[in-house]
Image (cartoon, rainbow, N blue to C red; front, side, top):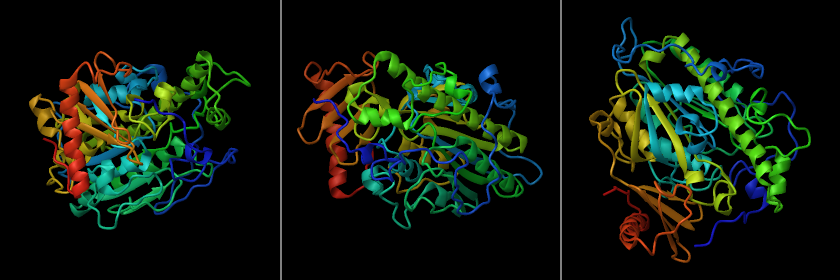
Length: 477
């Protein structure tokens, strides 16, 4: 099987995603423009100069005992739990601290210690808005119709998690941070706020400020639960975290290779970094992850200050990872190897979900919507192709279904089932089979030496393909 290459134009690679608006060649002013669509946003806080969470490794706030906390509160609090869904752009699982990665992530570490850490979670298409569509609809990109990021839109009337929550009486808000055309994701959101910066890069502090402003307003209406989706653009390239995160993993070095747009341009031009130069790029990427984790911690601290933490389901995940030359790919969108599709997922709700549990079953991002609905006691969505994980979590069991990933142009499809992963080149018919526990870097193709697993996974893809051709929903066997 041939390896993926950077066979894309500069406009394609350096766009927010394929099909999106190109990133400007020079940074915008220090104070960026913000597009607001519903809720006034408080003035942004200054860039952090210190990170207590990074320094101490402590949780963002003291949490109640999960054995005694209750979903139902007295004094007019909602009986149904609130939901805070956080997506952090471009985070590959193997760089997150709680997954054994190099980036320090004390907020996610704490959430994992108090909730469930899902160890085998897969994006259904490694681009931002197709993954968001998967999370919000529970459908594969080939079902939802959102295949190309910042180009395709959800059709009007598409059942979404936000719409289901709104119909159940929830206050609904969405805080997102990307530049692009209308994508239909506002369906079901009473407030939908864009905090994208003028240079198309992320500003996690602005995102947190907007989320805190929305939460503060929602907290005043204690008779109605809330559903808030917050998307952090960081750590999406370019990798330029603010101080002190810019020197957290490598010292300052004027003129050295970094995570800037200039470096991305060089990569597109065919330049390949030395191991030392790659280490500096990865240091910038990990700095972005730690910065985003810090801002998530700031948001959770405010959640606690508002008295909302004990009755709020918190879910944190990512839309896709990023590749750094593994298998010939840089960044994301073209391939389906682990570095771009294996993402973190952590969930916590005191008294309702187990605490400190690592769930090793195969999970898909399309499982988020059914799981959230199940946790809060709402009926399942018939249109969802994902499955609720609640029963397996509460019984101490696992999941036995596959995870499937596609790419926008249909060139490649991947399926993970148990310990095995199969990648199929849909143009040539070639297949690559990997045993992930013994070969997490996907270096040894065992399609010929292990025909049994190859045949089983191929049969799953054939069944999935049949539903695509028929225009029907996929129900995993």
